[in-house]
Image 1 (cartoon, helix red, strand yellow):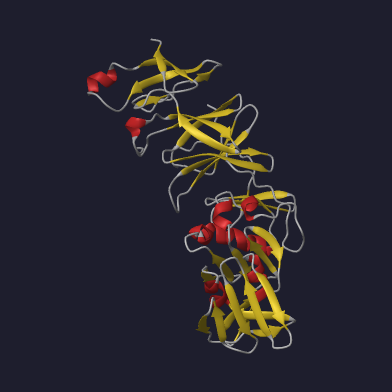
Image 2 (cartoon, one colour):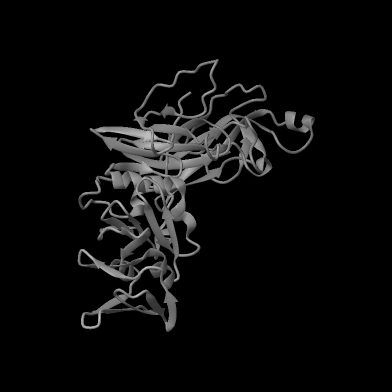
Length: 375
């Protein structure tokens, strides 16, 4: 039986961190971050003159370390938070004004004033390479932001809204590291990343160890249980099934159209068969390890593309189990304009005898949660 995969959120990137790219927003690189997540945020690196402001990639002067303290470019941070900066060259004072903040300081002085309140810094603001630098923590907190310093390969600095914790997602940080390396990301989300090098695609579920990402015929092996890393093919499209074995232990279905990936679905139960009919993706899961709220859903699903994202819903009646019988045998399932036809039975609810009485061949509506017993 043919099988297949799909993902939501398109991620095509022709970008190396040394030049301006077609895609310049973090949401274009990483599928699981939204405009809301990156609003009022700045990401910098001690090892790069590139930064993200509200998710948009831009250039800046590089942060520095002085006397064991991390210093960041004052004007860049202030203007990143929509504040105006005025520098009085005569008395070496700086005034920063936003809609809610008035911040003043003086070069060489450890005193910072925020809305009239005096704060003693442990190191003074100073000039370096014609730019004013200020200790990271003080300027971040002056704007009521949370400051996060990540002592990873690229020493990433995140200044964000206090509750916007999505930017610290481990795999998002690793995606940022790939961008700072100049790796052209084709797609990434919290489960895996796909990059392009020398005209070939490579994928990784840990964002470090990459392997070739291309269609491979799946060969069943009775001695090996393989849950992910499986390519599924239909008449027109390729799908890829990923299993997040190291993290959430979920099954993720991706649609692969050349170098374009979209994520179709995320399931707790193994995805065992996939078909495409019209513009929708239909797939079947198998209750090998159970499923949450099984009495409220079925194992036959449809994914529909809405506003650029795939949305899944179950088909048939809740508590029913289709395509697989009680011994795990796979029955054929056909799709037409009106319905899906296949074997099914009520797996959840009622007595054993009542469930046995539901064994039969069903026509399942393509919309809604209805079916008709044929025989």
